[in-house]
Length: 147
Length: 99
Image (cartoon, rainbow over all chains, first blue to last red; front, side):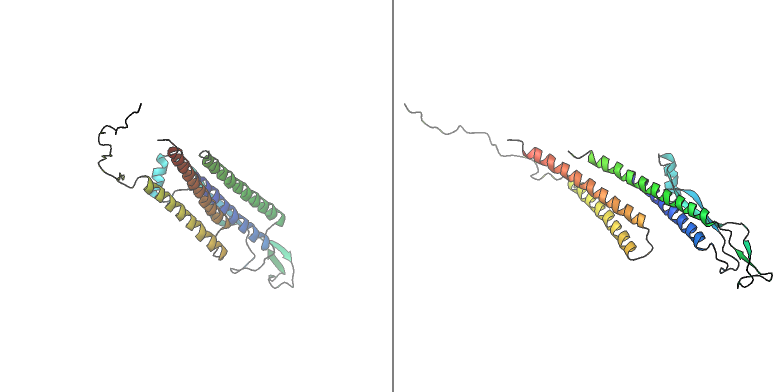
């Protein structure tokens, strides 16, 4: 059942890319959001990916270090806010305008977010293709037994 | 000229004298192995079933993990079927031996 771990690694990558797409879509949706729950404009978010051993627990991890189980999956380690300063626009009639009439908009470039979304979608496709070819590997090892 | 038909000379006792009539291996042997394999396939299938049901119920189940579980179930089932085919063909091969 070792080949199934390959499927699990690809599965973890699919999950991570889905979360990345979620965050990017959130940035796109909130490109013009001037009002959030904790005040101020929406902050652009980034995902941070980290590698993740496919074995849980201390003992399996130690055991894995003695065998050939070096492959690691991926997970979203955290979502961090981009520290870029807000873009100020002069809109005196806006409800979120400050006393000088300026409104703070999030520093989000929709084109850049769109490119990030394309990257996430392509990476998802890539990992789905890896699942497909792992499936073919297992299938061909089953085909050995066929007469 | 006639040849008188005589009975066969007495034969030594030809009945099988095996120590135990039914030789059953101690720990079930092959049958047990097959049963365990079928059970495992069933377990993987029910896991896939649960994941698909959870996805369809809208419990926030990931589509890809459900699909991977289904694919695992499919592959393990196919492996079991192929092993079974191989065993049956071996059995038929043996049963064709003339005696």
